[in-house]
Image 1 (cartoon, rainbow, N blue to C red):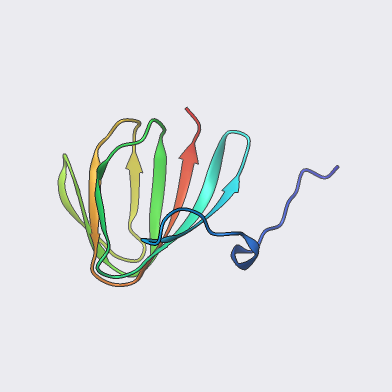
Image 2: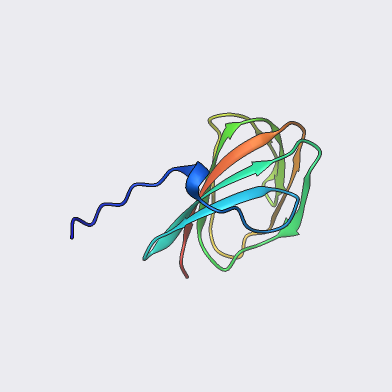
Length: 103
């Protein structure tokens, strides 16, 4: 067994609600996710039990957290420790990539 796997986002079944196209690749210590969000979508205030990084690949919006408002645009990378609240407004069709670490 080589320990190497190859994936293509088009081959991964989307899950979740109609607000976004979410596709997940699970790993042993965490997961990697692509989320495509239509412009106009609002992600209500929430937090996670796990550590998270996300990067904006395309699109734009505004993230609000305890630090204040952060412009979301391609190349922006955000890190959240567990249990840090945040919310977002997407002003254009946006694609983000997330790395989520298991708690």
